[in-house]
Picture 1 (tube, one colour):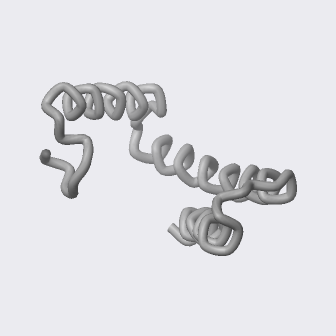
Picture 2: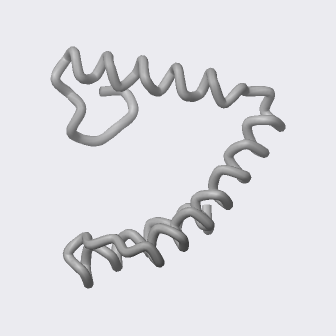
Length: 79
């Protein structure tokens, strides 16, 4: 969770301090942080016996369902 928070913190500062202008240095720093997030996600998925492909497919299906019902915005997993 800490690694995801580091990504969020960097993105927040880009939008808060520089109106969303992303520099090459930002891109490089975010690439490194996202690599950490990806590693932890992969490790957790492996330990749970869940393929990342299945995670992605289910997320796409979930978002497509929400879009078809007009509930992409809002809160909660069960919209």
